[in-house]
Length: 273
Image 1: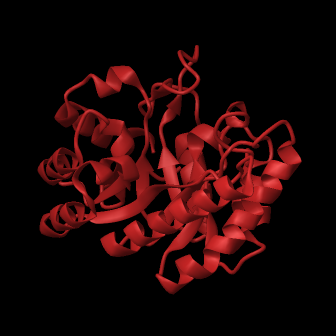
Image 2: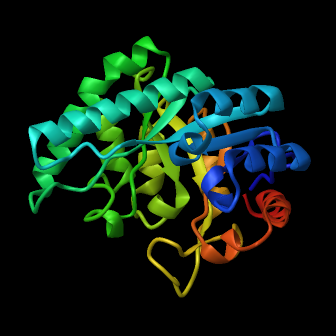
């Protein structure tokens, strides 16, 4: 297997240093000589879109994605419209900041009908596509691990995400492959191949054993059981040569000084990804 020899594709997903503000995260990336960052909307909102844009432009760092849109299933037409309106705001933010990809965490079912929830997701994306296309933003469907189906997303496998994305043009809708969410899938490598031409993002972390927490239990690369390099090479065989985001929810990492996190992240990226 081929080892990465540089960090030219390495992106800090901002949630990995959740203790930092947007400005602190950008400054940390500059110090660590990281070329990419993925921004979260709540961090943008803390200082406003205009100031966020100024900080990014002055830094010279590129944005790999904006997280997140989605959450389409809602219990009433009014709430569904509000969700769509919020997605349009997310597209506007991505366009203004120069980000090509808006990551979609599609949302749980509004009640106990998971099939209806999936239908609402498709309808929501269908409504959002023309708006996003006009603004030069691609929508990246990120399937989440099945354990998140009741709280975060009814789209729980890469195959399901690819099938949904294929209802649209490749320049409109694709998929985001996050190893934490898909590593378990017995059909993973076939589905990665199916995703050729539609992979809009690749996220890495690790699955710790025993898993300490459902949400906050992701590990730094090399601390768990995921075949990171094998998955990365499979993604690259489809033609994806874009940024590789490190996205980790872990309180211990959040409590660690950000510069130390970035130094370890760089080391583990080269060693394990």
